[in-house]
Image (cartoon, rainbow, N blue to C red; front, top):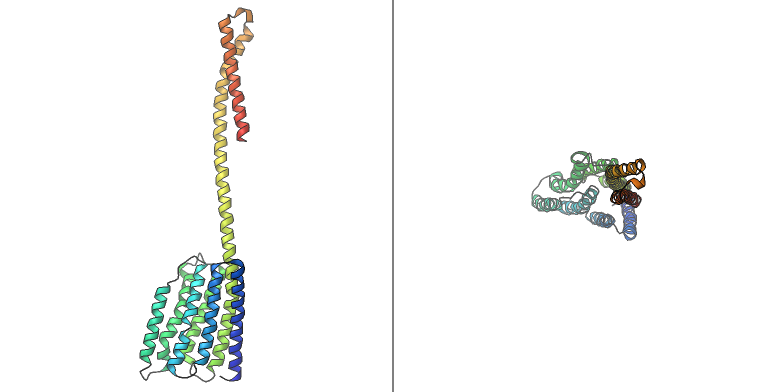
Length: 290
């Protein structure tokens, strides 16, 4: 590689290392699984760049070294779908990568163009990017946030860039603009991944607050029902207590005490006492309820 290509390559490596340090630091502080996956992603990106830098001759070596990108790109797909709490089809993508490797080895024995030889791994590397873009933009569009849709667009651009490898890798000067375009796309991705984390935190916090509010509303609704029921019961019970209370009070008021025999007088006092006691008890219950 000439000096300019080497400089671009070193910038890419340094950029990936910085993001690795950031992701690892966040994992140490927050202990969230997604940061661990992001750290692994940036490690595989660094390995991918190093492996590709050493494979500069021979169609099979160039294609297989480029094919190593299926590992970080599948990790990227796995991490991206975690933000929607969806499972990534890692087994299917793994089988696709193995099939691409076998087919590339077989095609290498034929005198065909580099494009046809590179096509299996081109499809295998583009597949994770296209799949996540499809999920964010179509199958789960309503659940996807604006940040997720922005990432989907970047992933589509990266998928197109995967096909650039098959079309233009053997053209003179392709490495320079290829590394530069990779740097630009990964730079965009590095900005979007933290934004996705912030967006995910906001969505989780909003969901948690909504759940708390809904729970409180249910509690208040239950208490309101209890209070309404209690008012109805109290109205009924107090009315029942007031009937004998008013009746016997009226008797005592209309008749002189000496006109009542002992039994009638005792009965009247007893009913008045029972009614007043029940009313007092109900008032105490209301106070306890409040």
